[in-house]
Length: 290
Image (cartoon, rainbow, N blue to C red; front, side):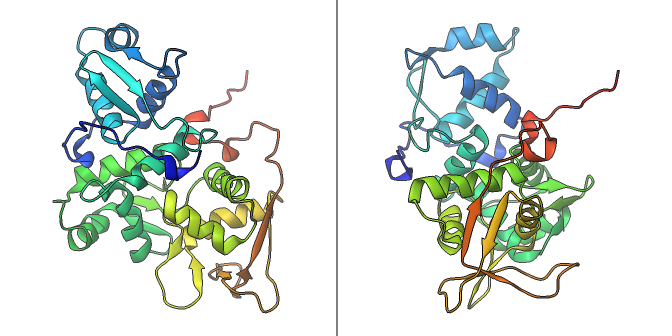
């Protein structure tokens, strides 16, 4: 099934999403995987036994966050019921989390909206302190501070939607695995290889990838860097077409001054080797020489 089958959970917690400051992607992914049971429901006590020793406050925070994002229902206090597993069922947890964040309505849309603000304000990198300033101007229905921006950063970096250089500067580029998966899902879902349609679809259901500008759509510089890496590795092929409509323009880079326009794309298989750059952050490992 597709996004049209998305179901909003009943009785969702009202706490503002960005205030779940202790929630992290690794725990969310672990819980999501544990919810995949033949019965379709999970008893809360079994989760407590499996994931906690004594204090279960953090478990409750994670479950409340997943309830607020429509991953689960809580028909009874002691029962957890996963929902929306049939919406883009083959997606990774990382892409699913982006989709759920993108489906939230105001004021709970703020975690997804941050990325759009960042993309509007910076071509490639952005300091966190500056992002706080921009958010208090653009998304003023939330009182932004460094703690809240850090919550968003840890969430989006953990699922590969952004990266970082140091403790202050964010890199507005998704990992290759994420961009490839979204292009592949579009191709399979919509039976199309039109690049303009693909990026519009990604923006509708998952995350920002375009720069805000009039006229011809332009891919954001950070996303372009990721796409260019996939092109250089022979994993994605792109082409323009004479007199084509709805092309997407790539911005110039440090090594390319022209701005090519893309109409169509095609995908080759990801490398078989277990290379970290083709994996999500939560799937990477450090190889130690013996």
